[in-house]
Image (tube, one colour):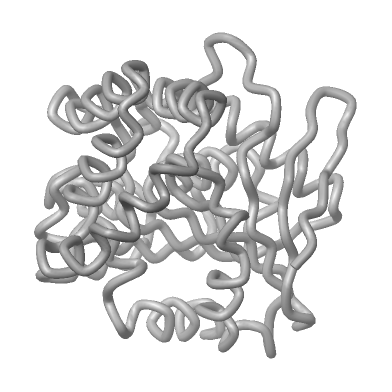
Length: 263
């Protein structure tokens, strides 16, 4: 699967496209140690049921990250990339940090978003929610890729899932470059002080907020806070699936697709 580079006057951003459905569907993934685009084939396989109705676009953050880059800048840049590609009136799915980005796009660029799905994300970065990221940043700055992968996976996934993935995490850590660790730090730092609470009321598109009661990264109340702030938003909470329920809950894809196709 080929990576496509979107070029604007201000930046370049990579993405991949799959499916040939008549409607655009944009996936904004969460923070990761290495680019999700490296796993684009696996993402395409997971979202194959979407491709009859949608052309799916999976985005990476912009290539060059300027000093002080923040989530609001990520929203602005991703909106710019969507415009460049002609992706107006798209269904948008944001997971974790990608959900923070998606909120900003929906609030500030409503013509780009037809429907919005927010998974395992937050409208505000409290001290408790920042703590895991602070630990990841420290490990990345110390060059401890193995410890970073284990700390990352250990809090994202339920214990049984994490143990099944432990060896894969350690193998992946062996391929991490210093540049990838530096980029990870810049992206994680982009969430410092994030607070979009006041903007939630400006999200006017149909929205589904999904969270997990055992989310060890953002806590059990983050999803409910978002749903309460977005007019008419739906809310669903999982049990026992962890922060990364978008990978572990077997019915999540079908639940999201039903919402996107309804009405």
